[in-house]
Amino acid sequence: MKKLWIFGILTLIVSSSTFAGGLLTNTNQHVSFLRMIARGASIDIDGVYSNPAGLGFMEDGTYFSVNWQSAYQTRIIDADFQRYGADNYIKRYKGKASAPVIPSVQAVYKTGDWAFSGSFAIVGGGGKASFNDGLAMFDSKVMAGIYSAKGGLVTTDMYTINSAMDGKQYIYGLQLGLSYKINDYLSVFGGSRMNYVNAGYEGYLDAKLKDQQQTVLNKIELDCEQTGWGITPIIGADFKYEKLNIGVKYEFMANLNIENKTKKNSDPEGALADYKDGVNTPNDIPEMLMAAVGYEFLPNLRATVEYHQFFDKDAGMANDKQKALTGNTHEYLFGVEWDVLKMLTVSGGFQKTDYGLSNDYQGDTSFSCDSYSIGLGAAIKFSPKVTLNVGYFWTDYKDYIKDIKATNTPGTGYNGTGLAGKDVYSRTNKVFGIGLDYKF
Image: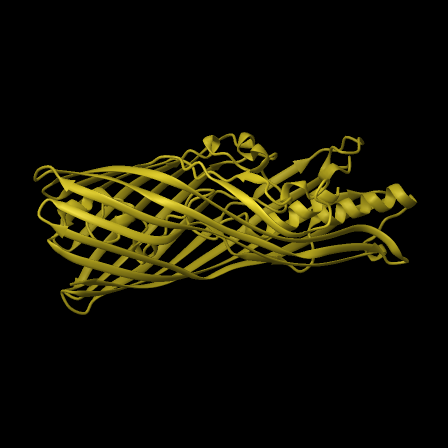
């Protein structure tokens, strides 16, 4: 039980990404993605990430882009579970997560048939989350513990939970690559991304009976930093013929482990063994396939359809959690942009994301939901050299219902209580962004 508590607090803070993309991958690395979504056929500086082979078709010159995004998310759990000797317990648990500063920088030097490119961005991780009213997994476990110790009716006014935890997890990516235009129709790309993980947790948790303040149900203290790195090889190709453009990119898996550097651990040989100093935990970044088809219907009107697959089941996660997935992540994207004026382009896009979720994968502290997203925005061309991008990205999530039947066997059933219960998981998400592109 104690290990479940600390694992819950930590993964609650950082496990679920506040960004777009797969379970472990951030795809919104340029504001052009927010305003159009489907950018896999782009022949512009944002192609450094979305379509690097297409950089071979850019005009000669030096390009630079700086972007700032801000993401905000809520995570909601509607819990309905049995209690020992009482009616069902129904409660809504609501948490907030935020990543107010998501920076990214891209650069391209194009000369002749060659294009040298680089970028720096946050390619994975999440913001800080806080559930002020606790979690169902904690309440149900405490109730089970009180019932085992005292028997009889169990209510929430019989115990107190005090906790404070600061957490962070970011995966920074530095990408370098080279594009080559083979002929007027085909360009290819080869490169790699160095991923660096910076994570840390500091805090405590203390749960007691109200009428017996000396009876401690759980007490935890932890101060742990985690770091690690891995390399993602990347290849791509772009086929361009008249008004048609097809972009393809494949990112190989980055084998990545994070190592603990622990200053304080209240139980390093038991419940907190995963956070013992020097312990390594798998945190792989999965393989990813991106393919897109873009077409110019009019000189001022363009559209793109796109597909992503994230091979999440092959990527190592803590405690082999990836084995609980029923399949990989699939995304379907569509985007359109219209040059309303010579200096103004408006755009919009749609994205549908399907995960291979299961009850064993989903939990109070780390859950995902299938979704669809809408992006809107504009590009303002102040001059042939300067373009300002603004975008808004909103996601609607499909509720995930986790229904657990009673077994009356401790360690099974709802949160190990042996009783029946049901959790309805839902989320909201919105991202704002502004970016500046400059050609020297």
